[in-house]
Structures are given as C-alpha cells and as structure tokens.
Image (cartoon, rainbow, N blue to C red; front, side, top):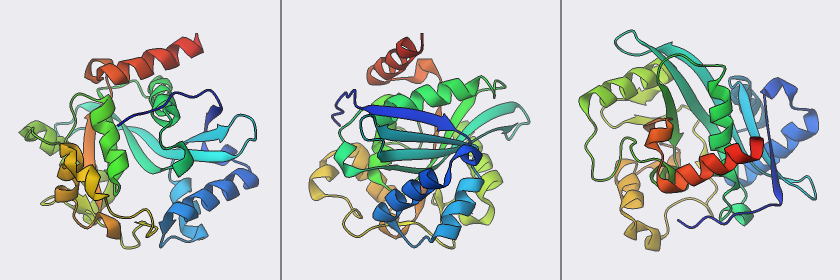
Length: 248
C-alpha cells in the first residue's frame, strides 16, 4: 500500500456533542456516498454512542474529505485486569484521498492523545471492518494484530477478543467465525463493494476475503491490535513521530 504525504488536509478531534448541524450534514452526506442500508436516524444514533470524532477537511475549502468515529473506554479483561479500548465506528475517506497519509497519521495521533484520559491497563484497538482497505491498514502500521495472515491467534488473545466483542456487541457477535452481524448492517455502495482481483495477490487482503466472505453484505470482521509504540511497524513509527513533532 502506497500512501502519499500531503499538506492540504487539516484535522479536528471532538466529542459528537460539539458537532454543529452543518458538520453532521456533511458527515452523513459523505457516509451515504459510500454506504447503503442506513438512514439518518440510524446514523445519528450510532454517532451518539461514540465519544470522539476525527474529521479530515480540505485546508483551503473546508470541505469534509473523511472522518472516523470512536468509542474510547476503560473496562476489565476476561481475568479482571484493567484495560483501555478504542472501539472503531465509521471510518470513511473520499476516494480522492485514498492515497493520502492523512487518515492513518491523524488517527494514530488522536488515539495517542486520547490515551491520556484512559491511562489504565494495556491499550487495545477493537476494530470492526467490512472493507479490505481498513483491514489492510493494520499490517501497514502494526507489527502484531489478530486475526492475521500467517500467524495463528494465541489463546490469550482469542479469549480477550471474544470477551471484548461479546461485551460490546452481545449476540451480534459469532465467536466461531469472529464476525459481527448487525440486524441493520452497513453495506458498501455497489461501486465500492467487493475486492478487485488484482488486490487478492496481497496475502493480507486474500486472508481478509477468506475470513469474511460476506463482507459485501455488511459482515464485520472483529480485529484486535495493541496500541503500543513497540508494536508499530517502521511506517507506523514514521507516522507517530511525525505527528508528535507537529504537536511540539
């Protein structure tokens, strides 16, 4: 995956309650261009369940080009130890910015800042994804995550993933497949659904397609990744240190 650096994209992180009507309208309009099967009321209910929103905008025009919603919280692991979790919601970037590094760069910076408010225990990313592009970001920026190509999931990580998924999604989570199936799933628009044949040459993309064969219909693969600097790939470290250098 090739990501292009840019300087024309700005970002903002805030609670959903601070979004004004025009910002919500722009988010739903962008969402609707990418997904079907969700109306405005469902979108607003889902947004209200989150406590952080990352918005990416064109620095010159102010137009929204992407956003990611998150629920960040503290809980207990299956053995009762404290743990902090970033649970991803909707993550959408306009195709015109797919080659940009802005989303992963600003997302990593945002979750590192949010860690200050949720300091207890290990820090994990609980990702649900019905799209191979989101899944592919894991292997680009993180050394270890599950489920993944070429590395069976250790029993302790499986227990933790199952525990967090059941806690958050209840009966919608199927432990046998590692899939969450919502009663009203989000489905990618037909022109975005599916995986181009050429991308299946990538073993990580092929793995995703095998583990989540019904992804075009809204099935969400549950993934777990520890958000720790030691777990970053070389590309991930460039993202982190670059983002931190802009804050100083």
